[in-house]
Length: 450
Image (tube, rainbow, N blue to C red; front, side, top):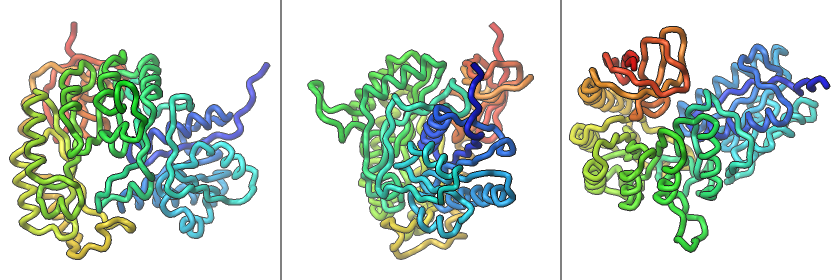
């Protein structure tokens, strides 16, 4: 019996954060199960699906630019249908439908599991549609099909959805809705399945990772929480387990002990602090002080020897003075973070900061961004140079003849730089290398034989 032909060939573009990437992988899994072929190039596709981001201004601009480029292909008759999914339609669906008549369907974060019937409707020409359930995001489980992007050796594991925090700069709660935890049994089943399928690295993500379990029912052993989940995941047969996005005020002693005692859960701590000046932290409604930041960082360095600390800061927040910024710079110089991201404040409608007075001029905010980035670059040039000459294990993400590109355990995908390995190394493997040089946030290395 000959195999049936695919309903259509779909090109998929995923934008934004790792959490969005998981949504994209679930949509790809549903499409494949629904009889669609996945095209690697848009030139080979009948349909395009774009999973968008709208977290900050630059993300919205990127999403709109990609949509317009693909819409031009549809207008020229090179595509039969165009679907826009994710955060952008969740936030602006009706407005987008008026402004982008070339798009056949807008699918929000709560409705992407319905992508297959939505796409079938679009291909049949049964009218355009906006499929957005306000204030709701789909919480998946391990029973749903998923097609990994970028190989099976490294996989994101989304443990929760939404956020209940009240940070005044952040639009995520209005886009993704209330906080929802996945059942621990579902997470563990998926983790074991991913590891059995070749995942050497599992990366835990959510909007607010250490709130995990707060909405789950109490069991005989107590309420499920992140510390217990860390201990359970540490039994999964993989190499690296990485935690992203730990809210600073919720990093407690039990979680620290769980990470310190783990074999596979990495001592890699991604804790977005956002600022170090008390007036700015209050205006951000972060629920912490600079002193609490100091104590937390000191405790982490003491109780998890060799821990890698990653954080992010926002500059140009409304009301941020020169003194506030200098306080932040001094804080960064003092604590010498292993990895640091700097963001310029983005004025977002519907957030608490949108109506605050004291807006920082765009040019000044960019100056502060560049100045803080320069401070961190000097720190990293010194700390990364200490790796030169060492032998380390590298997870190879991609490989070509004579060159592999991968990461140390201290480098999360796409945000912490990479290691360029000169030699023939297999993609998706752990390789022993010797670090030979540094360049910015990257390393050069050669394989170690034997």
